[in-house]
Image (cartoon, rainbow, N blue to C red; front, top):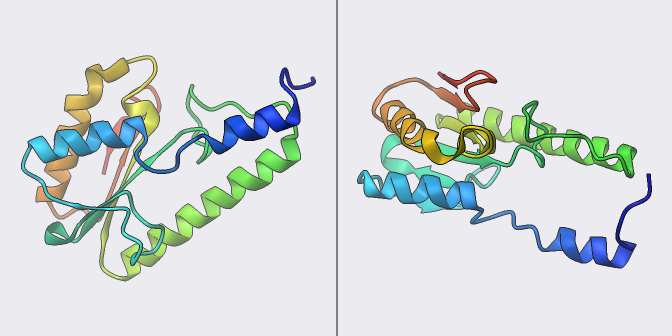
Amino acid sequence: MADVVDAATRSRMMSGIRGKNTRPELLIRKALHARGFRYRLHCKDLPGNPDLCLPKHRAVIFVHGCFWHGHGCHLFKWPKTRPEFWREKIGRNRAVDEAAINALQSAGWRVAVVWECAIKGRQGQARLPEVVAGIADWLHGEEPVLRIEAANEAGVSG
């Protein structure tokens, strides 16, 4: 199936998609700040440039977009145009994510991954307080890993 827009328009549209300060990231940041957590943003000195770094808790948080990181939820669908390009790109993103998480854990950091579908989509923002409460509990605890995704996927897990 051909794309509905020409290549130049598609390129311009794709280049406008942000990698930082996305809506899900901003919602998590605002809610954590309101709960009294202080953090650094997009820590370039750490593997994977985590979205949020909480040095006091020796923890980092990644807020992953379901499409760009190939999550198996209702928000992810393989593009029909240039499927080989997208499989390679998303596969590379997954590999980079895994390497960054492993490097962070090896360096003694605790890692949380919050998927976009946890606060967007079918449940909407009704789950945001639950997601933030889960992150806050994790930050005060000792668990090394936290993964939060849509309730119909795997829910909040440690």
